[in-house]
Length: 374
Image 1 (cartoon, rainbow, N blue to C red):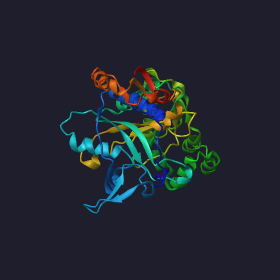
Image 2 (image 1 turned 45 degrees about the vertical axis):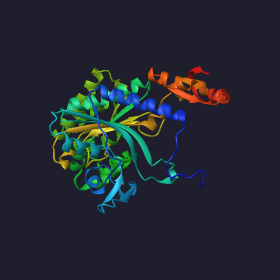
Image 3 (image 1 turned 180 degrees about the vertical axis):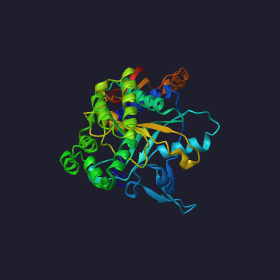
Image 4 (image 1 turned 135 degrees about the horizontal axis):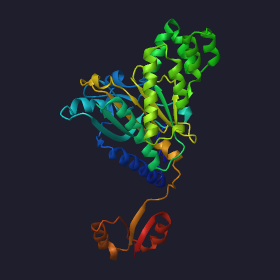
């Protein structure tokens, strides 16, 4: 058999890296569950048709797909936890009073472009909050993310917000120019937008400002003033302003928060704020979240909902703690000491047994033992 046989885009993980990954995952789960979230276990595969109607950024080319031999229906390896958690909430928790808080962890699977060197499996920890008031729930999710990164001693995170309701209203106001304006707004093409809206009207000034509307509370305040010609926009920006003010009051650094008025990801999926947690050390997002109040209705139960998912590999890249080997309480060497292993385990210790005493030094070089019995 070929020694290096491995599926494309998959990967092994060294013991030291595994220790650090497990530590990060446990720290996140501990924080999430400290907010009252209940852990659930979800299947590794899902029906294609279920995800097609309920998943953000659903594209066939991103899925790892196969056939259920019992039904002939298409199945996919889980590409996203959120629809599964929503179905669990809607179908199995009808007797639970609202709000409901659920958490989960595991791997998601995406088919990827091999030339990019991206793994097809990603380890995540996530949380979903159903049935709580919008401002309270959004605030809780963001404060939970803040506490996660504080617990991991990761500094320098940026919390970048968008709002799908704001962007949808902007595109409604653009009318027949919607597609072209959306393209230029997405690219933050100030020159092209200025050419589209050259007039000195409140509406044209607003459209020209949006590609540059990327910043903290000062940007939000200016945006609130410049969109005052439209009640829907003003109300939405007012919500963002209240959310920022509340988060600052609750200890989130004002300089770490950014509102991006041109953010337009998942317009048909998200119903309110979207959030990406970024860090200068990596090009990928450390965590993402958002509001999707229409999701659970697909499974027969209407409830407002928001969620957050943390990407373990990306967080690993900015975690400054050493990887190191797992510590084992005792190295027990020699057949004469074999019975001691069970005694030590019974007392709550971790034990590594080796019968050959000549292996002792090699084992000490390879593992991290607190004590030795030989």
